[in-house]
Length: 194
Image (cartoon, rainbow, N blue to C red; front, top):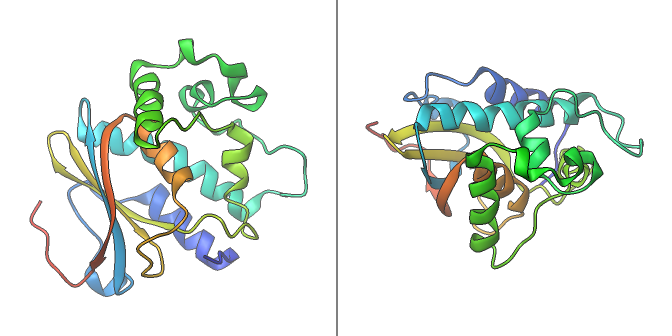
């Protein structure tokens, strides 16, 4: 998926501003097809959505503003809990024992979901938001609370059913997901009662 300055700016607005967590953007504002992830969380679903946004908003903003020719990207706006659960010197030195329970449990759930996938290095994860990097096959669209411990996350994948999303799954799990189903391609003209 190609990301441009304009598409990253629009994505940043969607991540940062969000909407009330039970309200989806109107179907007329969405692309004709989105990919849906159904996420079961431990704890409050609305708090989960805010944690996920708190990780993705600064990363997408870096995509709009950072110089990706540099050896490392600034991490001062990345939540400390996320940096702690990431691997490598850019992620708190692997101090996952200091990360909150939801991030540690999410790290384990990610490994199980991916069949043993290790933790992402924070800098490697951030470099996925480089507009010239084509391995990030998604753009954030929205997140809604679908139940007391269920969240629906939608991303634009250009209608593809198979796309690079391990970076998204890392954020989804470490924000507190216990189970993730998807992605499932979905026509956006439907109505969801939530």
